[in-house]
Length: 131
Image (cartoon, rainbow, N blue to C red; front, top):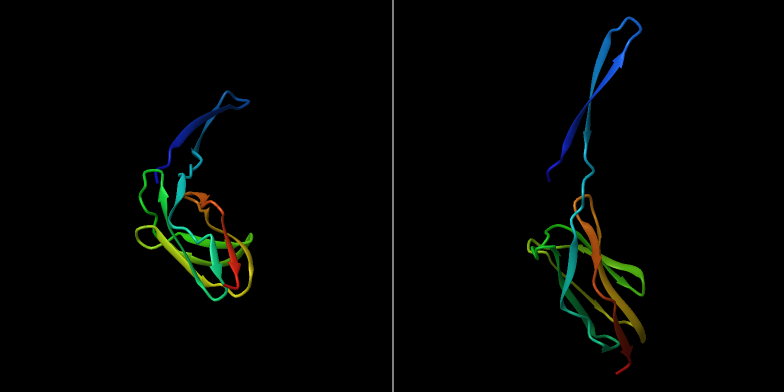
């Protein structure tokens, strides 16, 4: 990551006509890069109690390059269910077993860090029945 630096000279005139020079160094603000979450395998629209639901995707930068080592969170019904780390190619995968009937709102998210802005998948709905 490159940083732009500006050097500013400040001149202060004293009572005896003397001048003091101060050099201030300021760094430009860091700009985080955009990301996106690509979905490789969305959760199914329906499942039965006891089924394994698999949700897979890839975290990429704006050029489509996978981002390694970034924390990915799996949210179910808006709450953190689990989290993991993106692999060397940016891929992530979550699986879980359904334990009760109901409707699940499932989303994966990267909240961002000092270098990259956050992004999320769309929210998918899985309806779990008894089968």
